[in-house]
Length: 294
Image (cartoon, rainbow, N blue to C red; front, side, top):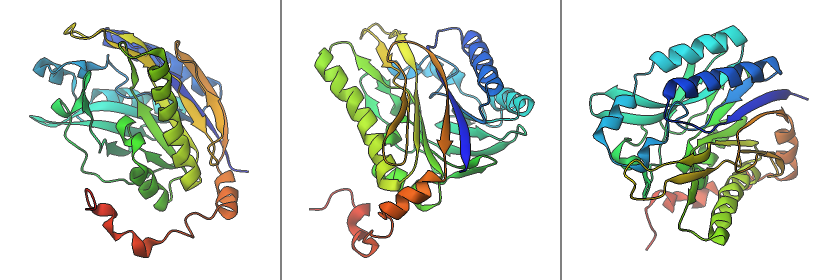
């Protein structure tokens, strides 16, 4: 059995970036001391979720890669001997920015990065204002703990992204996330949305025979413009096995620091029982690249 200890932090962010990073460092250190070999952080974890408004001053939050955050988390990864999946606001060039996941190897080096490909533009999620769609494609990142299929938040709704990662040998699918409730929705609608979010990624696990880890932020973050009542991030970070089974699901209203053992060899057995990759009709999928089939 090839077992991997995965840790994740479900954190409530505040306006004080230094405080967020200090708490993240404490949490990462604690997870490593508890045996975690891979630690996964939530989307844009250093700051509040700034995409609730369109504000050109928020571009000041962006940084280069390599840069201050990759240096900070790199030193931490090296000191603790772990792999860390981070999520940063990347300044690629003046006027050119990305929402970028960076994987830090246990020696502190950058193992690879993934630029978020699917960019939403919804009330309180004005990401198209800030982020250029990724141009690195869907490619797993090789690390000392396995081949990581790292995607980011809105990517979670697209089975094509998960499939392309699986077809290139990803050992697991990882989704740093920032998603929450709209205050005007009914309680029933809120729960439908949260369950849909969980269900679609569990479906990726089943369809590809891979574990899935989704790490979401939690707690209320106000809308600086006061046009809305802000976002209540719903937490509920989870780990699913290759048959979609929920191995752990965090609460929806508080921070959590979690370690789980993942049997990476189990995917081999599941794919033997359910050989979905074998039975794909790749000769009939040519039109999948069209926007819509009339």
